[in-house]
Length: 209
Picture 1 (tube, rainbow, N blue to C red):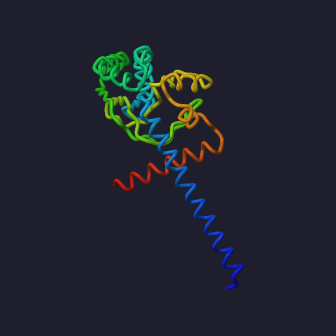
Picture 2 (cartoon, rainbow, N blue to C red):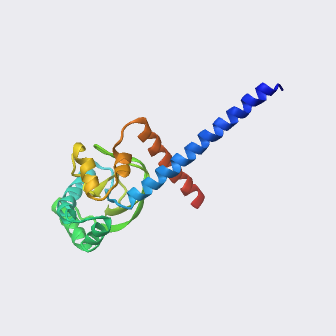
Picture 3 (cartoon, rainbow, N blue to C red):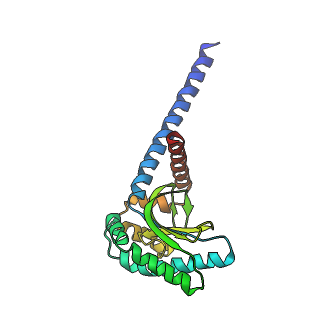
């Protein structure tokens, strides 16, 4: 093989290695940003009894009843730690509110509420997107909990924020500019970061399994 051809092949190998290194570095940085983001967020996860039209409608009514209580409750929280403490102190009250709403609509389903770490896939909302990862979530299980679920973010209060207010709301709750950029940017750079985070999360799950 001629020396020139060998040199070109080595150059291609070097370029491929640099691209791979860049990919791994970008993935690690995106994963770190995503992990730091998840440490500042509390999500709400409501699981319906079933996929029937009636049970799905009930799920949304329970959601609205709980949000009406949680939004003012968490308005004064400075960070996720305070938000978590406030929620843990009111779980029984929140369960009671959910049960009242269920009975008011003519159902006898049980309801259980827990605050626990939960793995979520990448999810798009109005004005922002959360990368896949493990987040602290207030999980509301209605009846059998076998229906389609609803989830959003209660701290920062991004569920209630309109699209234009999302960055300001997130920054006020202690998210950094990088973290806000990760959830609000819509260019190809964002898409790549989000996919990298999801890839790394899936790889972590495979290794743990």
